[in-house]
Image (tube, rainbow, N blue to C red; front, side, top):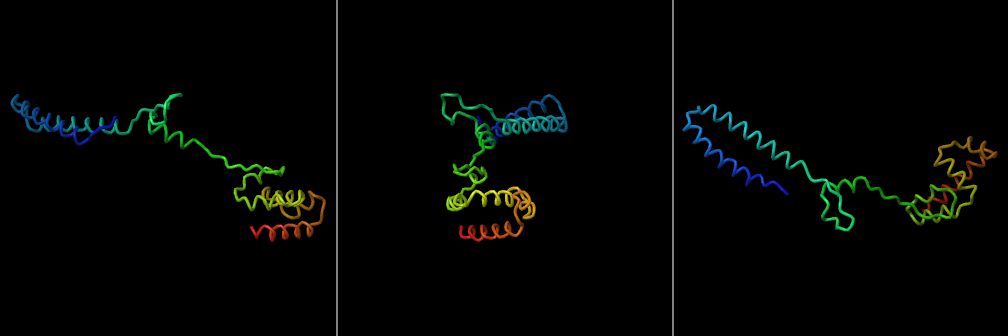
Amino acid sequence: MSFNKGYELKKFEAHWEKLRIEYAAAGMTEDAIQKMYDYDRQQFNSERTFIERTQEFTAPAYESSEEEASPLMLRYQEAITTTDTYHETKSKFAWIGEIENERLLAALESLSELDLKILTLYVYAGYTESEIASTLESKRITIHKRIERMAMFLKNF
């Protein structure tokens, strides 16, 4: 249910015109009447703000449509929903499944298991060439050359 500010303000002002006449006839000063008006206007604005900023927070019922849910609930559901883009991969290296580019995914899957292991340690885990060489019990220059070869191969994608 929405609050029509213009309509409600028009009703409020019309009501207060009657009250001004009644209060003046009762002998109240114009200053006292204005203070009462200011207070009521402040209450009117406060109520309007409350109505505009609060919404019913209902979730759609199990068998009902989403249109019945409050807009606030729909925005909340959208904000907390995450979409996981994970592609099925033949590789045992899970990070490869996160790649959305199908050509790059196919290229990575065509690499040997040793190359994928080196690539995982170098790019994904942040190891240096020396650390990879000591982990795989190999020479640093060998690792360096394999990384260069993989970089050139993957540049085409």
